[in-house]
Image (tube, one colour):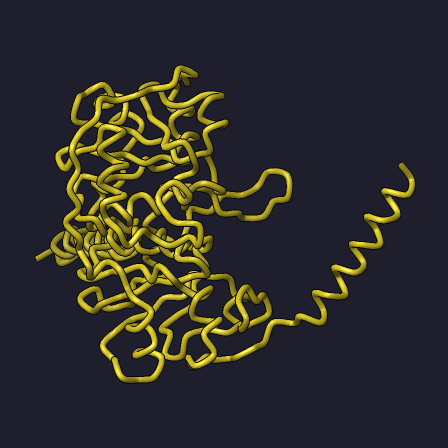
Amino acid sequence: MNWNKLFKPLAVLAVLSLGFVNLTATGAAKWANPDLLVSPDTVKQNINKANWIVVDCRDLKDYAKGHIPGAISLGKRCKKALRDSTARVWRDTNKYEKLFGKVGISNNTHVVFYYGDMKTLTDATVGFWIMEYLGHDKVYVLNGGLDAWRKAGNRLDKKPVKKSPATFKAKLVSARYAPTDEIASIARGKITARQVIDSRTEKEYAGKDIRAIRGGYIPNTTMNVSHLDTLKQVKNPKTGKMEAVAYFDPEPVEKAFGKLDKMQRTIAYCQTGTRSTMTYMQLRLMGFKDPANWDESWRVYGSQLALPVAGEQWYNFAGLNKKLKKLEKKVAKLEGKK
């Protein structure tokens, strides 16, 4: 018997099988809920339908310069139009019902939020999280925002769009909102079955960049991953360095959060609950069963002195006063030269 003839095809099959296994193991990560992101083609195919509304999350002046044809504006950036002056959601849901109804959004409307660039990306995710918190189950984000729309060969329009009024009724999903009391219980060890993600920068986490009375982080935080480190990375042709771009990519998200338990309640926070809405959306995309955004976040927590802080640092008011005095002198000199 010619053993070489017998084993050669088996060996080839084994190599191919190993190759397949390897490709499967190292292949591209995939979203569990990819439909939460939409493409320019999906927007183009549906934007003129009565039950679809596309919301431009940029400032009104940017909307007026050019927007996706058929898209509406809320009059302000979404993170301002949909929250109070302290960057927190309105606890009175009647305000949301009135606002969304006025711009033509009903409970049956498919709503797409889109952004302009990295600066307004989290405006779109603020809109996404708030609508999910209000119980709306047909909300999406245009992946790549306006950049993706233009690169797909689509034009912009300067004509303002106004939709017919509709009726919207909030059906709060309270689990998607993490209250400060819950975070305080986690910090004190009274609640343990939680995963907490700090979406701020390393400097904020370490207390070197303080944006409240105190700096530091929540005791028992599971991990600190800046929201920028979870975005698609491309090489800057000018600097040669890899930089984050405003596209949702499952690869860096899987790398950041893949080891977490998707069945356990997972809460994201940052400074004002803005960047962490992007983390919330990524958790939804990954299929986490009980994700939440801590709306009040560090601005509130770090200024309540009775609450425990890990790596506690105090705001340097003396240093700030020195900087203000130097600034006052510079302004006085400039005024004297006029």
